[in-house]
Image (cartoon, rainbow, N blue to C red; front, side, top):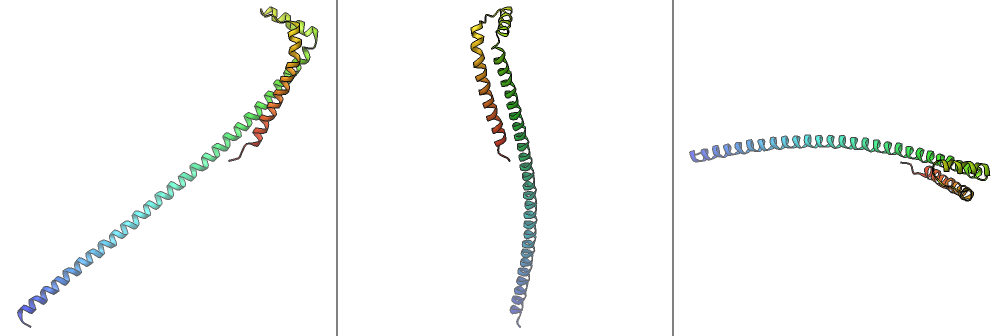
Length: 154
């Protein structure tokens, strides 16, 4: 082998060794990049899972609060209906009392003492109106009670 061939072969080997070393470094870098990408993906997945769990917990808490508010509203509606029915009974009782002349005379005297003018004819006319209003109040109470029972569940 002549000297030129020997130098070229040595240069070729050196170039091949450099290419192998560069290849090795590139491969090691690719492996490191892949590991980093997997770790990054794992962290993102964990954050997404934690966010999903938190969102689910928030949704459950929201549904529970809505159920509680709905139950409270239903209770209030039923209580309102009860109050309306009691009011209607009071109105009916007053309508019955107004049919009595002595009771009307007492109401007239009471109004006069307070500086108001009320006539017997006005009180007689009030009696049937009170009874009708009591019936209407009971009907509204019934509707309110039905609405409280027909509310949707969450």
